[in-house]
Image (cartoon, rainbow, N blue to C red):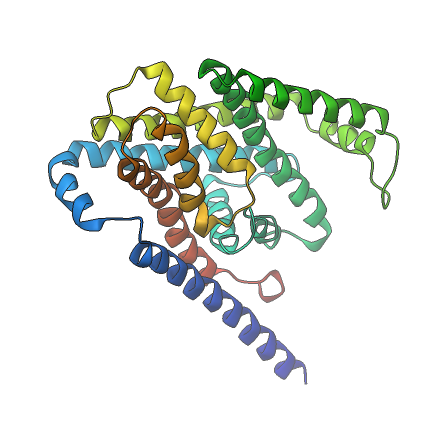
Length: 308
């Protein structure tokens, strides 16, 4: 009976891993092959002239650096409970990314990382992942709001600031109220338990990742000969990234969400819609598809802790 139970568990885990990998590849193929907004003939004609070896090298390096900074963020945060190597952090981050591709706003990523730790550490891992993603979202809101001011959307920027202050005020007034044993006061206490050196490093790595990602976006506009001032382009990128990140979506639909938001704002700057859509798709391919494909390899290699 024990042998049957063990083999049943092995088969279940194998089936789940296979479904994740097949599903990931299917969604990637479906979006790239059947999206009517993508004019591949036009893209390849332009790509032959624009995408030189040096351009491709820069884009791939920036994609690597973007994800590597995320890996270092995770390694740094996990050091609060356990020291792990960079290769182990890479495995956890990329496998979790692949596992979260089907879930709204990558929620499955939280469960994916928790699988690499003891069950008793699950809540802590979920909390650390929340810290990891939270600082990135704070930076996105901050730079996005600055971008709105710069582009003249003052009213919307003030509304966002007002909402932030309102939420802060409500949080302060209700910080002691517990919901199922949890409260904002307890959350702040948990955050303060993490050493300040870890927080500082996490913040610096998050800023570095934001700079790399946004400038990869900027670099692609230069490749497509979009002639706009640096400040205007960066402000628009910040606004697009902020608004698109605020909308509920799935990882495999990320380019569609960002592409539609980008088309609206860059359209006001007279940037051709097909260029905006292709850049959004390329950003998705470079920063989601490639890491997910590598992550699928780690998913297939994953061994449950009960099997080790």
